[in-house]
Image (cartoon, rainbow, N blue to C red):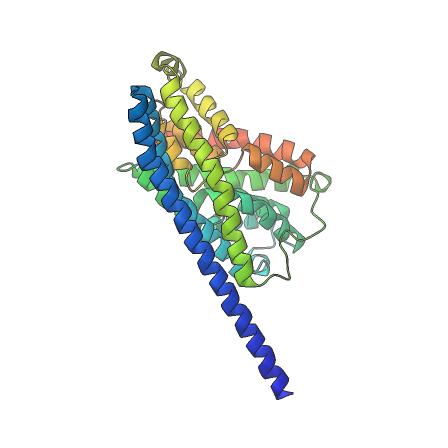
Length: 341
């Protein structure tokens, strides 16, 4: 019997070593990919701009390179933190720590996004898992909105994207938390159980080891969100270069129009929350309130999140929840922005 236990422990140790080696390989590949992105964007881009010898192309590469190079490290850090939290923190901890009353559980769950960060792509299945384990839907939805919006990685990235503007970080934190808590309370008051369809199967493979789940989570979050970062950087650079200044002045002349424009742009660009501050900072033609709206709306309402919510909770839920969340996020951004900025 002891020999069998010893052999079993040897197999477990071998599995751990094998998974550790695989994780190191993936980390090295991720570092190589990061180096490749920086090299292509930082070296080949300016060389191509010089060959074409057109100032607009050179300016486009400058904006694109700045957004990508600044955003990728935070994107990788956010993927690592999100995978670690999703792997090491059991869902039952939420059920134990949250108050039973939805009215009290909502602000607690919203504030939990500060210490339990996660990518917006991962927050949807996590919220579904929490509801299946007995957490009040209002609290789970508040956490769904707050986790990708007010976590430490996002706040540090925002402070670096807006150097010398600490109130922008404070405004993003306050506006995002107010939106998440407001939506949780609205669901607790007006939400209907029939609007919420839960998946019949777990969002993750329960048989997978922690190391395997961690590696898979890092791969998914970094590669999936990295593509949206590149697209967002390209769109921001194109917007800065291709749109005439006179047309930008038309939009920025009215504070309401500029806020609504960037709030809609955040829905379309689908930039990850760990990197959207750099995209917002690159849109320097717009005012701080409009930039704040871009950063508050993006992690809560965009096209990829709508698709994830529709697939997880149903299309009727996604339509109602996303539309109301967009209005709440814009309203919160306007009031908090005019108050703090």
